[in-house]
Length: 251
Image (cartoon, rainbow, N blue to C red; front, side):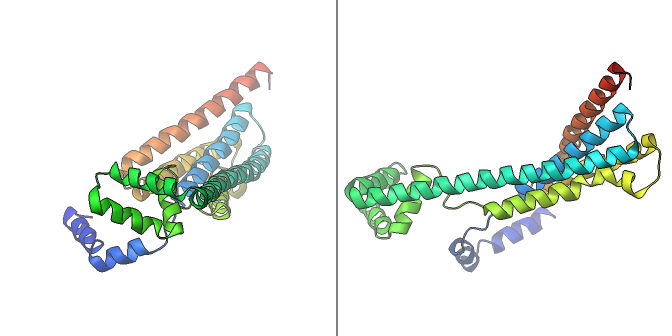
């Protein structure tokens, strides 16, 4: 997209009506991070099993079975971990909300002084400062939201734990299947299947990186190469471990 088109789109998104609609709507959480995390980890861990199995000289069927078992178990474990992480953040916010509500009910003048101090530090003073304090403290929910963000550094809300877990698990399975495809869909010998698996996996790493770069508005090529190198390094380590252990035990 050209710079002129970007500036035109930016201007359109900052008209009074567009700003009113965007700011007045509930915050829309992005699950791009969960998808990228699940996809990268799924591909890396599954190919790590493939690389280790190939390095040890396992039968292709054994590699496929081990890969599937790892895919489901690790994917589920990662989804649960992401769920617990999001749930914990949600519980911290709710706990802080209850504490601030209790403080407002118990020591309202002290809480007003906190609001006053927060906005005084932002450069407001005099009648304007007092109007800001009066406006914020006139609505308890707005008051609590302000304290969450300004005093505790917390967001007003977080992504839904179940949705974050589902996105992570789905992308883990979807992308994690890529390294296993040559072992399911072809009758290739182990070495050839492993070569095809490596190519597909590296392509998946690069694609995920490009999509991540696009979502985060970063240079797509650079993001793709970074993800490719990270995933390739993990796969190379797994292959080396499998190869060395197989030689050490004479397999």
